[in-house]
View 1: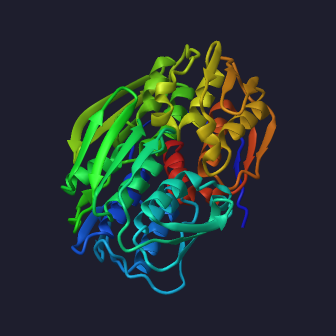
View 2: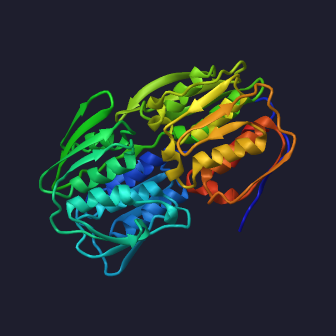
View 3: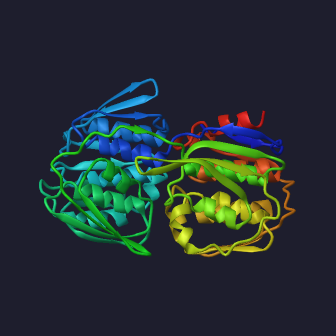
Length: 437
C-alpha cells in the first residue's frame, strides 16, 4: 500500500531531548558475527528495523537460534560452518549491507545458495563483491552481477590480496568475513571507511593487524577455528541522528539534545561538514564502549550558514548523510560544491540524482553531473508550492530528507511510501511528533 505522508506547515520552535534508534551498521554486523559463534551472544537495544529483521531471518535459515527477551536479543550460531539446506534461498530485503556481507560469509558453502532482495536491491550492482570473492574460490551466477545471485563456495577457500579503492566498508567487511573461513592470511589494502568491523573483530579477539596511512588501511587477517561470543549494548545511530541535526539547524529558536549516539570518527563527517557551514553542534558526555566513541549531541538553530567547497576526505564518513547536508547548503549564503559522489547513486536509489531533483522542486538552483553537485544557496529560501515526491524506490533517506525539507522550508508536501522508514528508522515519525507537540 502506497501510504502518503503530508506536510502543510513548518515545525514549531522546540527544545527537547531525544533518543534515536540503534545503529544499523552495528546491529547487522553483530548479528552476522554472532551467527559464527557456537556460544550465546546477547545484544541490548538491537535495532528492530526491516533490514535487521532480514538479517535475523537469514541467519535462522543458516541454522542459528535466535530468541528475544524484552529488549534483548540472544543468538547461538553454528560456528564457522553453516548448516546449509538444499535449494536454500536467503532474502536480504532492502539491505545492501546484509546482501554484500552475507556473500562473504558463504564462501565456504559447498551447496549452491540463492540470494534475493526487494525491487530496489535487485537494481544494485554486486560486482564489487563478486569479483574479490571469486578470488577466494567461490563461484557465482547472476543477472549481470545483480540479484538474484547464486553462490557456491568451497570447503577450503584460499586467502587473497584485495585492493579496496572505493572506500566501501561493505566490500571490506565482506572480504574480512571470507578471510575468516580460509587457512591462510588475507591482506587488504582499503581506502578509509567505517571501521565497525575492525572494532568488533578486536573485541572478539580475532588475530588481525592494521597499518594505517593517510589514505589507506593495510589489514592482515587470517582464518580462525572458532569465533567467540559477543555481548553488546547498541548506541544510537548517527545516520538517523543527522535528520534531526538538520531539522534543528534549519528551524527557528530551537535546540535538541540527542542522547547516547555513536560518534565513531569514521561516521561523523556530517558533524564536521555542518560545523564548517556554521552550524552550532556540541558533543558532551563522551565515553568509549567496545572501541566505539559514544556521546550526547547538542544542536541549536543556526543563522548565517555559509556555503562549503566540501573536502572529499569527508565523503566516506558522511556518505549516508549528504541528502540532508544538501538542505543546509540550500539555506546557506553562496555556492556549495560536493564532488566525487558517484557512490551516492549506488545506494537504495540514485541518491545524488534525487537530491538534485528535490532541490529543483523546491526552487533551488543546482548543477548536477554524474559525480558532483553545485548548490546555489539562498538564506531567505521559503517554499510556497505543492511538491509531490514519488517513484524513489522506497529509499528511506529520500523520504526522510523530504520530510525535513517540508518541515523547515514550508510548502505543501505529499511524500509517497511512508513505510519506507521501516527499513532503518521505524520510529522516525513518532519522534518527530514528540518534538512538534
